[in-house]
Amino acid sequence: MAAIAPLPEATVRLLAAGEVIDSPAAVVRELVENSLDAGADRIRVGLWPELWRVQIQDNGFGIEASELAMAAHAHATSKLRTLSDLWQLRTLGFRGEGLHSIAVVAQLEIVSATGASPTALRARYDHTGALQSLEAVAGAPGTVVTASELFDEQPVRRRFLADHKAQARLVAQLLQRYALAHPGHLFELAHDGRKVLQLPPAANLKQRILQILTQYDEHDLREVTLAHQSRSVRLVMGLPDRCSRARADWLQIYVNRRFVRHSELEQAVRTGFERTLRRGRHPLCIVQLELPAEEVDWNRHPAKLEVQLAATPQVAALVIAAIAEGLRHFAPKPSEGLLSAAEDWLPYRTGDQESGLLLRALIQMQRTYIVAEYPGGICLVEQHVAHERVLFEQLETSWELVAVDPPIAIDLSERQAANLREQGLAIEPFGARNWLVRSIPAALVERSDCLEALVELSRQEDSHEMRAALSCRTAIRNGTVLTPAQMQELLERWQRTKNPHTCPHGRPIYMPLTDGELARFFRRRWHICGS
Ligand code: ADP
Ligand code: MG
Picture 1: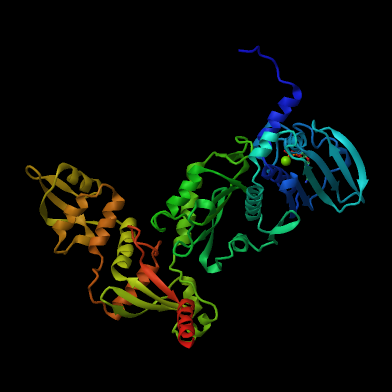
Picture 2 (picture 1 turned 90 degrees about the horizontal axis):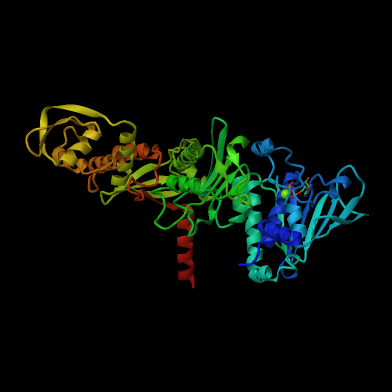
């Protein structure tokens, strides 16, 4: 083994810088964050991957002449003064490493003008971050930072980053995240001088998402805001019957306007969508949290991609509650143009749409499906699963037990008896494997299959499963004839449930057919006939 010797200073600098700046995307990250911290709301990024050059232009408050000399020094920042500030962070940057690290691995140039001065200043830095030259130039208020000859002295890094298209994609993805965190700002990306991403200011997060995901429209998404104590969440989610993704690329968590990876919160989103999506599909859900600065530890990851929260379980509960709110209400998608025509002849108006009660029962089909209409289409509702959902949610809120006299004698194992007892049923031994049940769920009273139902319930290991089993057993069977009044009542009760999309086992409850789909179908047919 060789003797231990300290590394040369330049090498130490390069190693440290390499942790912060490992790609063109990392340069963009550091510079865009500086622009946002400088209050900019117009941010334009230029990327020349083959030239190893990145430029960011902003309309922020600029850098004073006296500050330019310090800007690229190691650990020089205007954002953090004392250690205790670390627990009150309001800025994206705070380590004073961004510009320094870029200077170490690239040629760094800053052109900046504050509102106060009539001209701009151009500063150039050497690889130690020291100011090399400073001159007055023409320039509008704001800052343009250029990093060129990136990784000039690190051929190995350049080799790893050889796929320029992939680099550009990463930068675009990164900018989209900042754009989602700041829907009201303008973001642009030019690749080799050609604009590849153009996001003008959007009215809100939902509109921003639609700027990027142009295949969806407003009716596919739902926005929910929810606050508890000093924490709040705003999320925009895709309705599970309309949007889902093959990958989890649109399941994104933001904390205080910064994109983060947080496995517990990502899991909370999945839990919120449990039993609403087909197997293997991922939800579209952008979760933006506003948390008190002192509950967030940013100082855990060089790119601040990971974060530690002081109250993860409470925040997760808030996220799950917000998703539950978003899933509520049956929400068929009205098709424009045809909607107003439909409303003209329907006996109710848009007011009903707000209460979420839209459906009018027309007929029963095959003694199984209720054919219903709503302003904008028709819909088939499977009577059994819809009723099952209604009963299940009733049982979740009130698990009512009633005494039975005489008691019911039943043959159960110890385990089965214990399962029933855990759910509050009064049950006592009555000889070997024989039990006397003295109280049962109210839903089973006067049912001829009460005994079989109790045996089935006793096999369920948790309260959720037991309620699902009881609602399945007691829901109207398919094959049962329903009167128009019964159909209407069922539709109304089902539409008031918390999750009208799926039954407790994840089966879909309704199938809508919108006016638009009908029109498209028949128009297509017409073309075929005409040709
Ligand atoms: P940090 O962002 O952690 O403070 P940086 O090295 O990224 O460290 O930036 C150093 C300082 O330079 C910042 O604290 C800020 O005062 C100033 N600065 C950098 N970029 C800009 C910009 N685009 N507009 C205004 N000031 C900037
Ligand atoms: Mg910074």
